Image (cartoon, rainbow, N blue to C red; front, side, top):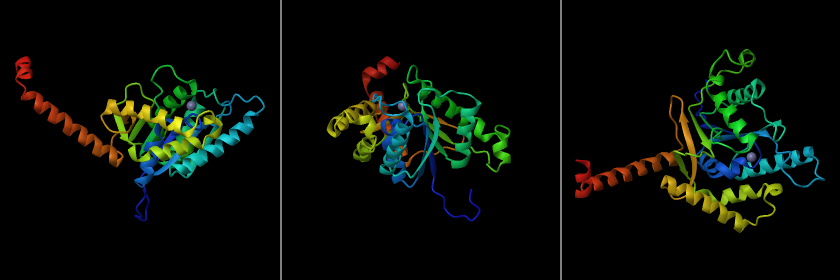
Length: 271
Ligand SMILES: [Zn+2]
């Protein structure tokens, strides 16, 4: 909390394994948060140095290229800070070192919302699982406890409490963000990852993305959605549009319930 009572923007932190993970899973949500005035920071655990079939490309050169692509994609979504932890692609290991690095990022950025991979969704890229689980551990309880990574606290970083977490790529999502205003920006941000999307043209990409979002939307009954599993820890804060959509969904469910209560067949079955 600032001492001079200056209004502070709301802050979100997105922790993912590789450059392009964000744009593929939650780029629309990020763009919507940025439009709503949130300050969003990206943290990439690896710089994707193995993400190419081109054998002539040295991993360090690929990493540098992909960091530049990530920064360009972030700017497309309204995000101006990317933190690169530079773990080796494919070899992210959960342990005190990784968790400490993530706790440090959380304590520096001080977000109320964190978005990361759902590390519990079953088989997936090893780095996605590892990063999702470690980032969640960093949020709860590690970052908030002054006795964990106490050297960070004695070095001047304060413990920090994250209020809510959105897990991307969840097998059983329970939270949908309407990203219908953000489709074009999402596709543009993906195209900034030129080393990854070279085989696909923009139209094909837009079509594929629209199909994925249509499926997510059908589950969540909102028009164009990105889906998440949501966890809250104390104080609740939701992106504004998502709150409005949740209210709409509830209203519809109530209307359906009322309609079924007036249905004599349903009444008979209930009695
Ligand atoms: Zn990835």
